[in-house]
Amino acid sequence: MIYHHMSGAGNTFLVADGRTAPHPDLSPDDVLNAIANHPRSDGAEIEGVLVLRSSELQTFAADYYNPDGSHGMMCGNGSRCIVRFAIDHGVDATSTITFTLNGAPYTADVLGDDLIRIHFSAPNDVRTFARGELSGVDQAVTYVDVNSDHVVIDGPRDASRPIVQALRHHAVFLRGVNVNMVDLRRDGTAAIATFERGVEAITGACGTGALSAAVALWLQRRAGDSVHFVPPSGRPLMVHIDHNGTTITGLTLEGDARYDNA
Image (cartoon, rainbow, N blue to C red; front, side, top):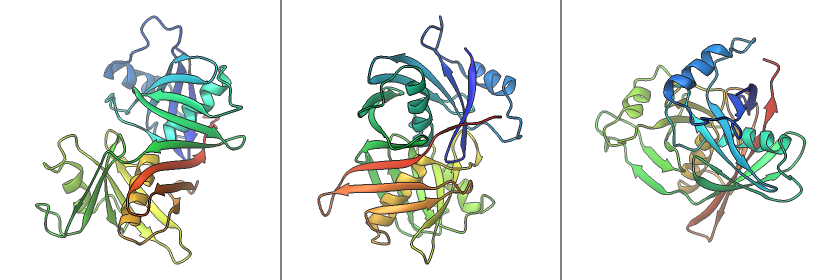
């Protein structure tokens, strides 16, 4: 397979067309080798691998892999990249696109040359933990499952905080979690940094992290239905929450998807 460098809101990926590959499923070693053999010229870390599996006129299937080779979770920024890649490989973008990523269904709208919106269902699970309720954690925590496991805490946005590792590997979260640190700004935007599972570092951006943070802020009545996030990359993400007044019924994630000369 031929790999291309792409990024969504600063989250960096390798993307490949696996539709005619004899063995498109990647093992952890395949993922590690692909990343090692396709470094970016700008020196940035590659934060995931996406493979297009099949496609028809307005639908496609793809898989996402973390850089450690783990598989099965949703990647919000990667989903926008694979939508754009699928369009460039024959999928029709004139109306809403349906697709599956790691087997889960989603829809997407193309809003501009590199701007794409992904539609999500309501979170699978949301749990709140008061300060001290989780062993070894002295801060309030919100857990959100949007086909990727996240916890949301207030800033500062610093990976060296002991709470980051305490949450990342906490026994309560059996699959492990991504840790999102959020600072609300006076202008109404939210600065966010995500320590990602599988990357084991703060990434340039995290789409499902932004979704989870928006859910947490909305439930805490600290944000409205739409939240503008600024990740470390500086390339913005917009999350909108659909609801019936008290219950979240759906989510959308909007941001860029670009090919990188890397």
